[in-house]
Image (cartoon, rainbow, N blue to C red; front, side, top):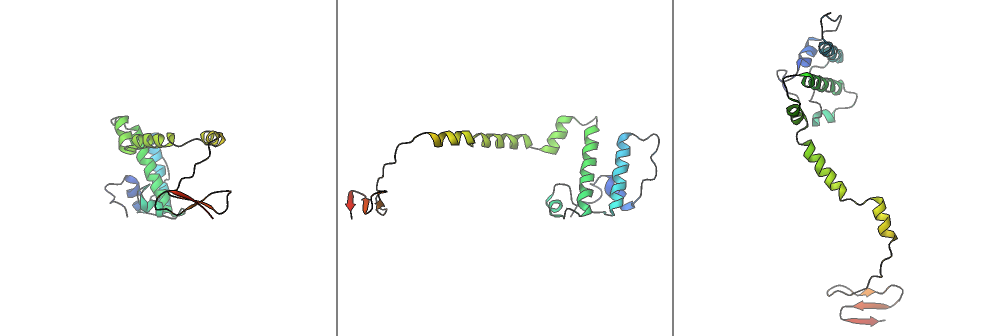
Length: 161
């Protein structure tokens, strides 16, 4: 269901240890404190294996399954680590995380621009249009003329009943 603990952040390893947070070292940075809190939350859930956040197996979990929360914590911790990493250029990180999201968004915007707005639809309906001229087509059955019972249009001739 998930990859091995080698590819996972330390949260998976901490969950296997099941340690609880008793105290925070005085010299701990905010990032380290956040990581300790995530580790204790994972340990409290008593899960050691969960699908990756946003994956199909994760979406198929029941909302109350503790593995859903574990995956969310893991994803948040991965985001926090990448976001504060001074060595990783922001453009590379966003490309790695969001992939071609900008191209997808551009396609969606282009598609929505082709959809008529409610105002355009109302304006089109309000414009008077000329009556449709009935014309019989070869190979099709006769057309009943509206408002004239018994009168039909047949390709090449007009029949009256």
